[in-house]
Length: 166
Image 1: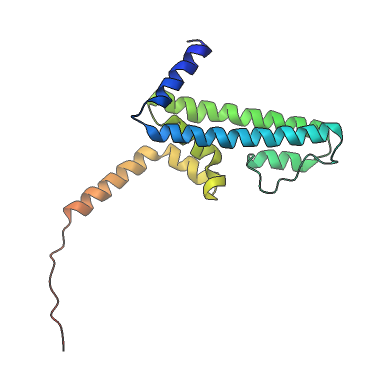
Image 2: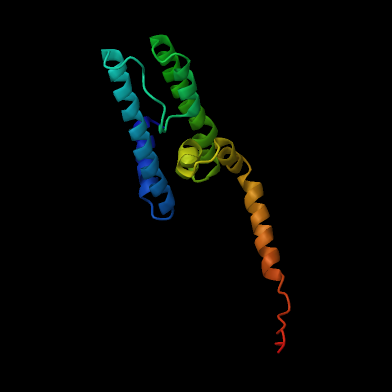
C-alpha cells in the first residue's frame, strides 16, 4: 500500500463515527506533536544563529525525558544536540513499532494508545512506566475489571433495616 493510499484509509477511519474517541485522540496528539516540533525548531534556530548560548531550558517541555537528559550533558555542544535529535527520532520510531503498528495489527485504538504512551506522562503527571504497563497488560487488566464487575453484580447483600434506638 502506498503512502497516499495509507493516508486516505487513515483519514476515512478517523472520519468514521464508530470510534469518535480515536478522532479526538488524533487531534490532541497532532496538537501536542506540532507544539513539540515547533518548540524544537525555534530552539534549534536560536541555537544555530547564536541567539542563545545554550540549546534551551528543559523546564515545562513536552519533549521525552531522555531528550532532556542528553541535551543536559552539554547543551552548548552541537554534536550533543545532534545526538539528542537522533535519539528523538529513534523514540518516535520505537513508538511507531511498539505501539502504533502493534495496535493497528490487533485492531486496538491506535491513536488513543499512542497519545497515552507518548504524552500521557505530561498530561496526567505520572511515570511513563505506568502508562506503558497499562498498555502492555491491558487484556489482563480489562479481564480482571470485568470479573470484578460481574462479581459485584452477583453479590447482593441482604438489605436489612436497622431499628432505630431511642
